[in-house]
Picture: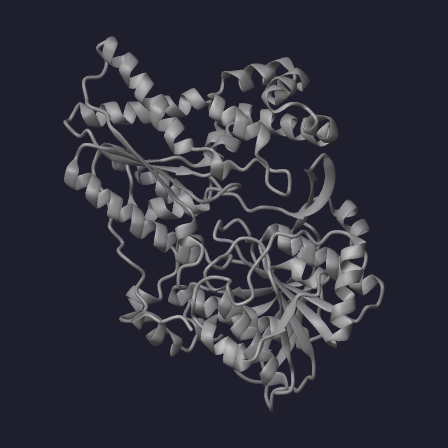
Amino acid sequence: MSTKSALQIARAAYQPKLPQALRGALKTVEGAPTQSVADQEEVKKLFPNTYGMPYLKFEPADGAPAKKSINAGVILSGGQAPGGHNVIAGLFDGLKKLDPANKLYGFILGPGGLVDHNYMELTADIIDEYRNTGGFDIIGSGRTKLEKKDQFDKGLEILKELDIKALVIIGGDDSNTNACVLAEYYKAIGAGVQVIGCPKTIDGDLKNSEIETSFGFDTATKVYSEIIGNIERDCNSARKYWHFIKLMGRSASHVTLECALQTQPNITLIGEEVEAKNQTLDDIVTYIAQAVADRASRGLNFGTVLVPEGLIEFIPAIKKLIAELNDVLAANQAEFDNVAADQKIQYIVGKLSAANAAIFKSLPESVSRQLALERDPHGNVQVSLIETEQLLADMVGAKLAAWKKEGKYQGKYATQHHFCGYEGRCAAPSNFDADYCYSLGYNASMLIAAGKTGYMSSIKNTVAPADQWIAGGIPITMMMNMEKRNGEMKPVIRKALVELDGAPFKEFAKHRDEWARETCFVYPGPIQYFGPTEVCDQPTKTLKLEHK
């Protein structure tokens, strides 16, 4: 038995807050039918049994809560995010409220646990050990993709054996896409198994009008902002380094934008803006170098730069290169696997168009190798392995050296590099995430009780106190469009990117020139779990600005 810290012991007693509608008897109110965000005909054809379902809203009702006997299973899928344990705790408590005899089974190490029949029953003793804690270690997570009929059929065997009538998949956009595919298949064959999704990702790119935020984003950005604030304080104390800080967010820059709003660094790069302005790598380097030079002219040879993890993929020329690389590798994988290691780069260059081959050869060798050779299980570039912060710092240094020779720059330039990544994924959830996740899980049990499948648990109005939150469900098909994956068009949940005309980016853009010129650092400090509500229960600045 591991020893618990004083905070863990105190935190175990925290009772998460629930929306009013989930505290007793409730009724289900159906809204308008829905359609996918794009490619309606294609998506409808692929999901004939779960497409077009209405929005759902739960409202308080008179009388005693309805009883329902049903066993459920739960899967943690993909990368960890703070609050996952509370989703499971909320689901467990909701199922037991429906009928104390109901059982909850956890599938071990992600979707693979369903396929391999690797599971455990989650009892009250186990659940109580994990309430209000970070991590996914209660049952572990994994990245197995549920997309093949034989996987669905194999999973159905164990679901029938355990008399499980509902499965809750806690994950990001890919995982919830898989949940939707599974819901469609089980409904099509009359398997009698409901599938419900829960929105998880610290990247913040799984959201829309009904899903205001993905869980874990609040906690992770507060953890990163504490680290950035500490670095800024050190930066302002030593006054001799430029700190380049890379932040999580492969496909969207929400984390970077939120941390910028919390800490007010000198330079913040937003990938979506780089793409919209059709900027080159040199444009970005020149922008940073100019800010460094301007501060140096006033004796300020220090500062902080925030860099989103996926910046490379937002640079239009490199984005086109990556798209062609993906197609080349998907079409020639067997042949590519047999090419000698020292010939692989040359082989790829020979398959690229002249324009993309030229860009590929112009990149530093470390970056070109990572773009070409190191892929994740979905065939994506592993951008977290590309040391973008080091690349930018070095390129800025080279440009400043050239300017110094030309007499355009007289300052001193020394750098430090940081990557805020895994530190934020398993932190003890903030009060917001503890409450939000518990509500998502409890709400999922009510969607199960209502007989729904192919829905994502939705909790809205989250800038208000928790008792005013709105509980319900959103059809997962509503979030879908068609995208190319591994050379094929597939239905996927569309990622929510930073909107350049949205309130959070506009607030940042209004201040960034001042933050670049002056030293306006903010030091947020660590997450506070106990104390006044204005300190402990605050949602992110992004959420407050979006719902002002």
